Length: 304
Image 1 (cartoon, helix red, strand yellow):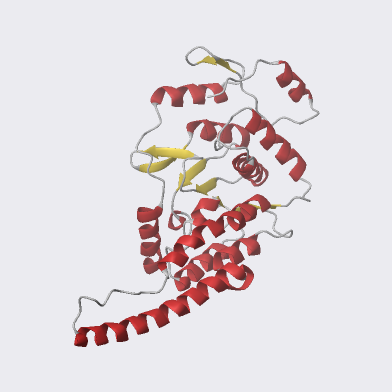
Image 2 (cartoon, one colour):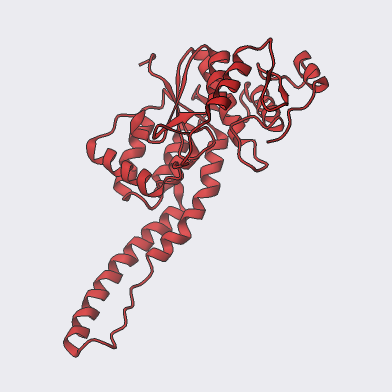
């Protein structure tokens, strides 16, 4: 429905599925994802992140599928024969599994349901997809670049603009369509845990409302934003419980929440937090616009 929230699924959600679900369940889950294509916000950066990082999941899986070769030195003759027969059967099944994994590695377009699903979403005729040749790409990238340089969330401690680009595109889509947004992520880039549940970073929440007049909500499971059958939902819960890094062990401090909210929602005032003065710099800056010129003349926001 047009009133349903738009959805952004972070790359880590897709990557955490490798080796955690059976191939049949991954196929079924990705079918549910692509069925929601009219609501899912994507971009080429997301495809790059999954394509680049998927290979890091495979060495461990290949090790797990290695041949079984137990020692028979402590077994009697009858036991050795029974073990040998059983091991031979197990290794035959493991060989079949290794071949399936090799096909997934070597030919993802045919044998990797996760990769295929993202490719199916990242296409020029998808209005919720940002491509490098899209008319919106230059201003969105400029805003992401400025955001990164100013150390605004979301970001990692690296040299990638990826999280900033995702966020600016999410905000753009929400503002253009007048829709709320649900973000699914399993790391700390977009928020923290509060009351045992994922909570969007208050800085981002206030900014999002200010720029779009809508709301953004953070989740760590696909089933929270896409209806799944019971068996698939239980399987995904198990993946999140055993493999998700979304267990930060801390809550966002009230002082930081209130300071961030006041900072963003009251653009004509300044908020002092421990001394430094933070100035609001939204809407996003244009590389050649007056706002960019004013920002260049303003004191820099200190690094965390």
